[in-house]
Amino acid sequence: MSHVFHRNSNNLPPIGMKGDGVYLYDTDGKAYFDGSGGAAVSCLGHGDQDIINAIKRQLDSMAFAHTGFLGSQPAEDLADLLVKHAPESLEHVYFVSGGSEAVEAALKLARQYFVEIGQSQRSKIIARRQSYHGNTLGALAVGGNEWRRAQFAPLLIDVSHIGPCYEYRNRRAEETSFEYGQRVANELEEEILRLGPDQVMAFIAEPVVGATMGAVPSVEGYFKRIREICDTYGVLLILDEVMCGMGRTGTLFAAEQEEISPDICTIAKGLGAGYQPIGATLCSGEIFNTIKNGSGFFQHGHTYIGHPTACSAGLAVVQKLTQGGVVEHVTAKGQQLLDLLQQEFGRHPNVGDIRGRGLFVGMEFVADRGRKAVIDPCHKFNSRLKAAAFDAGLICYPMGGTIDGRHGDHVLLAPPFISETHHLEEVVSKLATAVRKVTAELG
Ligand code: PLP
Image 1 (cartoon, rainbow, N blue to C red):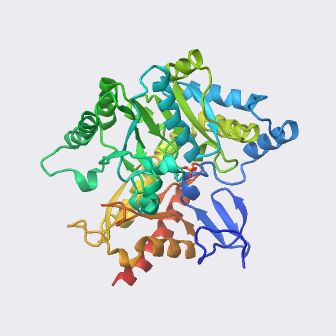
Image 2 (cartoon, protein in one colour; image 1 turned 180 degrees about the vertical axis):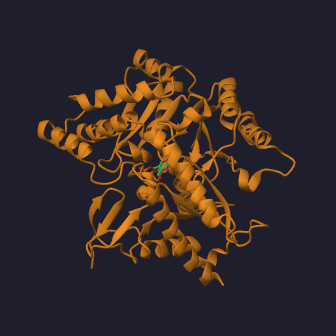
Image 3 (cartoon, rainbow, N blue to C red; image 1 turned 90 degrees about the vertical axis):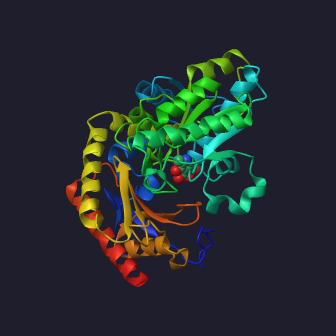
């Protein structure tokens, strides 16, 4: 019996032994194509010697120093590099150990900013249904996935949730995509007015939704209108790029493709690429300088903030991502993956939608394409798909959550950026094997 407290205590995973390129191997030597990079983490694949050597060098010189006493060169260099490539408003970087921590820091930073400018009445947060921002209590509260939130609801701070930008299900027949995007963005304005414009502190959203709906980009113009509304009412815009950032969608920051700049942005996952746990909260000069020239102290911190070894891994990763056309490769390969999925599943009776941006691609499964009816949850489609894909040697990320956050079946593919055409063909072929198996069982 394992003494590890696995999340799923009745279905223990095999022990992983080795990672090499796009593959992971278990102790029996079985190979798994890492088709979702775990959960959009392993963007540069496994066994990258440049990153490993950067970590080793840092371990040899100074593994750790508490930032209350000493800073570190990797943290300085990584912050410089991120700011150099970030949307223009983002000028400072607060390093943490993962995505939920980055979101917690973002929320507290927003709150402290308003306290320091004398608007301490601003404490309300608006977020979106069907979003995921992490599992710590603050991050879970802003998240909109009912399945994850339900049993913890009494512990969560009160957050308003507006609808997501989810064209496949919610655009009306008489609307263009653009009109649809403006209509759902305007829900933010309605909610700000309902809560009282001087009460609202921040709006948080994922530029491309990941962990609840399997890669859903917004429609053109949606985020520009969101930015406009936030500016009108002095509400801070927090973009959560924990999953979709760091080149995943074809630009280092997903916000670049929306042609907007947030006030705060969270990143993690691809930042450490799985070699070290690291996340970061980037903020505007306005927020940073307000605190610097005010109390001078951000009232938040964990022991491992700015961990030098984690930052050395992040630095090696972002150096790779910003040199040598890696993210351009993502755009080209992402299109190829979408095309391959269209060829394989475009007419499949149980595939309603194929979507994504860059190597961040999702498919939504339905009982009936015409009516877009969800598959009865009693079939446990997404967990069976995960198991069937795993048997076929593919790690992908099936998930539930369509209409009220509980029902609906999606799969997220987020293969490593080093994937070539034959790798993508392998992913699609293994996924097809798994889908065939599970849909045959549906009858
Ligand atoms: N934000 C988003 C958009 C995520 O997708 C996730 C994780 O999937 C998180 C935050 C939480 O990150 P972590 O699991 O590293 O705490």
